Length: 175
Image (cartoon, rainbow, N blue to C red; front, side, top):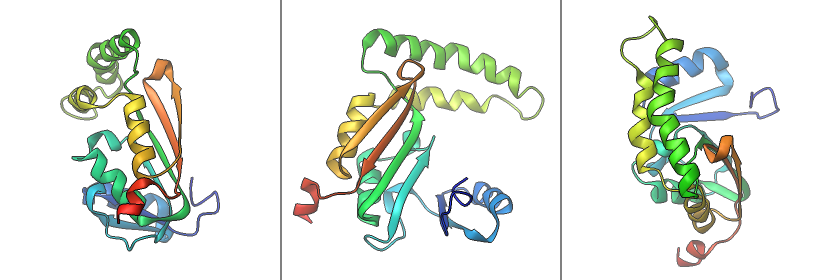
C-alpha cells in the first residue's frame, strides 16, 4: 500500500525474521527488512520521514521508550501513525470492549482459523489488552514524546488511529 502510494523506500522493523521474510516476499526490493524492536531503532536521529505502526504498539516492552525512539528517528515535520486495538476511557465502554476481546473475539477467531493453525493465536491479545493504557493516556504519551496528536476511535473505541506531527516538544529541550 505504501509503495503504491508513492513512497520510495519502506523499512520494516520487527523482531521476527519469519515475518520480515514474508513481507519481503510480498513487497519486493523496495522493502528493506530490519530485525529490531521499537525501543531501540537502528536509525540515525531525524532520518525517517514517517513512522507507521499497525497492531504492534500494544506489544512493546516500553511504550514510552518506543515513542521516544519514534520521535528521535523522525525528522521535524515528519509524522507518526498508529493503528491498534484501543481501550476506551469510559468505564462502561472499557468493560464492553474488554468482554468482546476476552470472550467473543477468541470464539470468532477459532472459527475463522479452524484447521489452519494449532491453538488460537488471537488469545495472546487478551493479556496485551489488559496491560494497555487507555486511549487518552496513549494520546497524551504520544504528544509528550512526538508532538501534537489526533485520536480517532472506531468500534466504540476498541479500534484507534493516532496521528501525530513531529514538532518540538518539551523532551527535545532536554536533549
